[in-house]
Length: 154
Image 1 (spheres, rainbow, N blue to C red):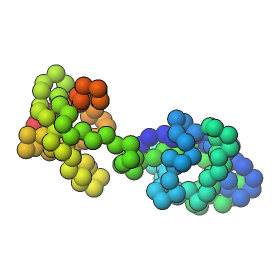
Image 2 (cartoon, rainbow, N blue to C red):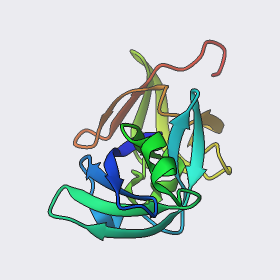
Image 3 (cartoon, rainbow, N blue to C red):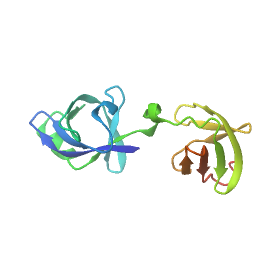
């Protein structure tokens, strides 16, 4: 999950929210994919029904199922998150990069296997899960990817 905005306050009585954008533009928030708000430690999906820019770093947004001032007040102060797998346009193509498991050379990445919910790197005939928790360093200039892979994976 990637935080993209913070809900600053309610706006009006119909559930609209004023949000502060975090290093993204309004155009990067899709109305076709869900955004998430954390409730009791779990991400709850919402769809963006409308979003209108208010300056460079703010916007008015209406999320599904937030239809009243009371609903809006319940989410004030929370972050809006995107699921990293929906960020495909920003995803790096690691083909040709050198993969390391900490300091140990694993090999050259020959491709990415797009398994739904679990993309994997193809390296020397093996599949290595491409998960953000495993990535220690990604250096596009040197085409070098350093991961901390679970023991026994390779």
